[in-house]
Image (cartoon, rainbow over all chains, first blue to last red; front, top):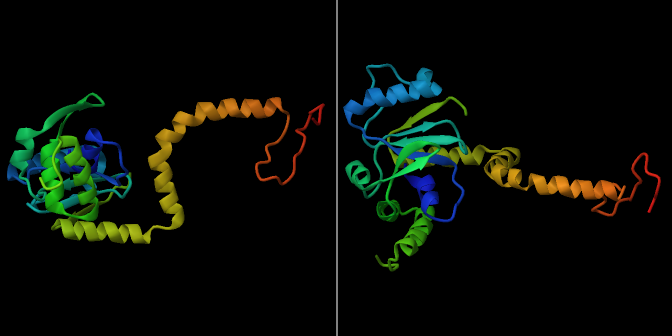
Length: 134
Length: 80
């Protein structure tokens, strides 16, 4: 889990229109993601089996805001491997969810650089006890 | 949840689609989305609202927050 929901686990809640997940674009992950999406009721929306869904850089949007789920195959400033190696596993509704660490979330927010990312980065710096220039 | 899947080649394209989605929303749809996000907070305050209504009935008055007209409730024996 990354993005606004991860931010909300560490800091005062702010509104967000979607929940973001980082998924590996590794070809070995293709069948797993297809199965998850099919189990979740999105089977009919998937492209045919011979067409890959997970291509690095792609964003898959399920549904519409404010009940939207985004699957991202790449995020700014940090790699999938870094995120997984340093993530915090948080129990949410009885499920162990890997959540991006605050330090990497900050790194990602700084690299993304949109207005809302800059605001998030400001709060994350305070959480991590870092100066504005870190 | 609406069963649609949209695939974008990069974040910029996804952000642009998100902006277009937002621009197409009516005030009612924005209001509905906001209410959906706020629902847990309103649910938490509903018990307080029920207590508040009991207090209104005790006074045997229809609330008239805007000062339009105070009316007696049907069956009320007192106007005071």
